[in-house]
Length: 102
Image 1 (tube, rainbow, N blue to C red):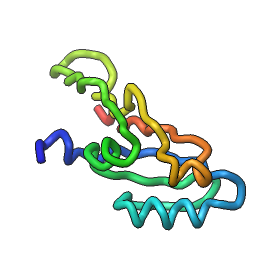
Image 2 (image 1 turned 45 degrees about the vertical axis):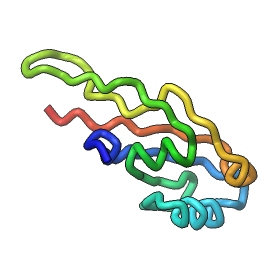
Image 3 (image 1 turned 30 degrees about the horizontal axis):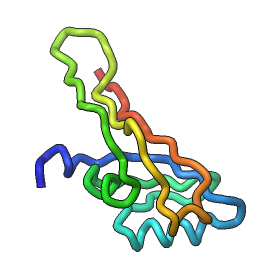
Image 4 (image 1 turned 90 degrees about the vertical axis):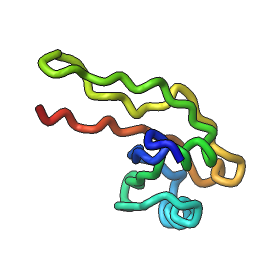
């Protein structure tokens, strides 16, 4: 698997009312790492898993050169589709940008 496909992509997933635990269990069964279940479900997974489960297409990563000002490489997909098996459980997905430390 190419190195870029192994890079983890984090997201906050909003479950449909009262389905948080069920959604978290299903995501975990599909291979997503669940960090927290609350108002949203915090998850991460390799890009390849986002591609296979959600048909996510990612924009090319832009690298920031030393000394330049700008944003860190983006992890947000250009598009994604919630599969029919998860549609009754999930309301929305917000992909989390990595923090810019320096």
